[in-house]
Length: 397
Image (tube, rainbow, N blue to C red; front, side):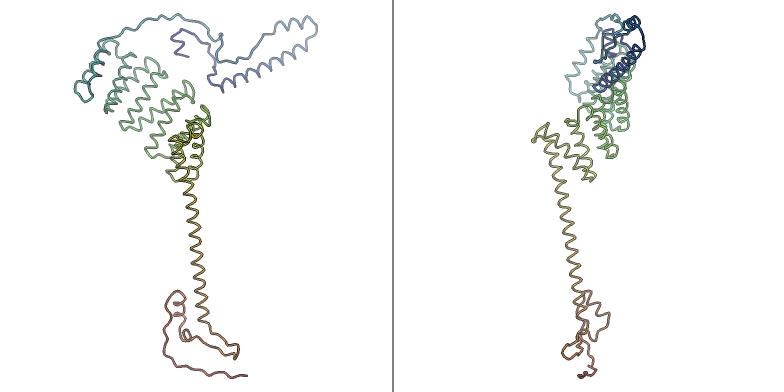
């Protein structure tokens, strides 16, 4: 609105405008409720009046009110200020130097010498504080960045950002675009802290200028999440991605492709942190949207399906391993119990039912308790010891 007003010369009425469908619906609902309340109050007032004359006078004095169903109405334009439009003078010399430098390769020594000469011409013609000078700094910085000179690119992007903040405004599209490119240059230069601060400034200014559902806000938060993931900051990265899912679902819909892509990123982070249960749920949601919007043969659909199937196979294999482990432990326990029972039966004296004579096992009859316990625990059979047989047989009663 500010750009339109400045170029056309419109003076807008100062009020809150509904720029989204949600705000417009809320505006219509509020105006409808207010109109109904006003009509009800007027009806009650008219019913108290007595006499036809008073009634007619009151009816004619009521003002007609309507519900505004659009963002703008003609009454929002208070005045039109004349705007003098003239062409901005330019320098052909700087353009010629720029075109000549573009034909050279970045590794040649004369390339950046010509570019610096073009920058000096821009400063001489337009002045240091001028949007055209800032735009040239921006182009020059992009050349440095593409050539691998990130430090020089950061310096030029900063100059351009400062000039555009002073000439076009801190919340103008040009300024925010330069700040975004400056953040990318800081990332290429390895200054992650400066990059995050710049992105935060961009997000705050876009949110103030429009709202938090602006595409530039979502793009900036997406870039922040990628950097946080590279730095292995899983917690902050997950928080940013969850915020992105919330904004994207409200702006584009729950089943939109961009929302599914953010879910896919969250699922990958959960997968890397071995949170397989929640990761499977996010992969399944993203997979369903990818199939509907992109088809079953798309790369994202195939990758999400592969992750989801791997997690399911992992859960099945883990369940089988646990079952096999429990079965093996049960078999070992049963075998140990059987061995203990066999050893106990072999060590105990047996009685003959026929003659009621106690028959002792010669293997354990003359062994100590320690020898018998060693045999039970898996040792060898105790060796026989030479000992004279003693005792008398008992006769029948």
